[in-house]
Amino acid sequence: MFVLSIIKDTIAILPANFGVPPAQALIAEINKKYANRVLHDVGLCICAFDLVEAGEGKVRYGDGCLWYKVRFRMVVFRPFASEVILAKVKSSDEDGIRLSVGFFDDIYVPLAYLPQPSAFDPNERAHFWLPDSEATTPHELLESATADRMYIDQGEVVRARMEADEFYDDEPGPPKASEGVAVKREARRAPYSIICSIAEQGLGPVPWWKSAQPDGDAMDEE
Image (tube, rainbow, N blue to C red; front, side, top):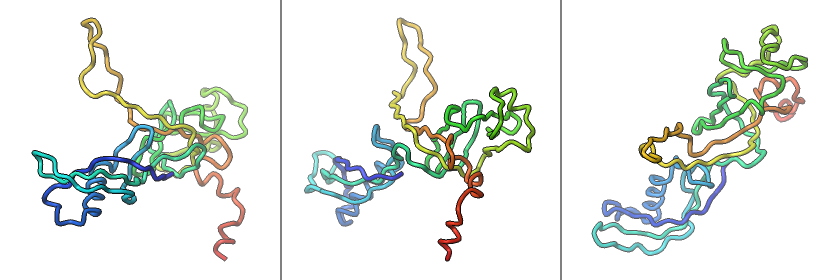
């Protein structure tokens, strides 16, 4: 889920921080610049792990700051392919389920990665799975008895397997014009999003599979 990425940059230390040890001041400035920021094809930056290399601070004309060329390791959130993560259901709609790990909410389970057969219940605003059912269409599934449905409710903890991730670099600013006609701008996309699956055994809401687990927890307690 978390990886270390080596990043190179030039970091400025303000005159007010000249009395702070350089390594401490650099880590603080790196965190200020990178924490909670998405780097394209890298992931979501969490915090600086350590400094790998730092050059000698140099003063540039006009600002009075000390500028350091640094290499540092950054803790990055980017689950690897097929990794199973625990997340909470944030919301559900006709297109699928949105999950959250607390500090990151752009995790999605599209319809193709839901256990089958399943359908979306508009009254409960939640998807449900109907195991061992011969029904195939959403209409047939919605006619099933509510007691037979296994709902994936909001706030429920689920196991999800990472299938793919996507990076977007949408340009900010007003809509562009083409031949004098304003082009409608698409809805702004999250800079980083993750696609997950809950379509296999062991995946989905944790309570679904508790009864199927061996007495491993009891063994651990012993």
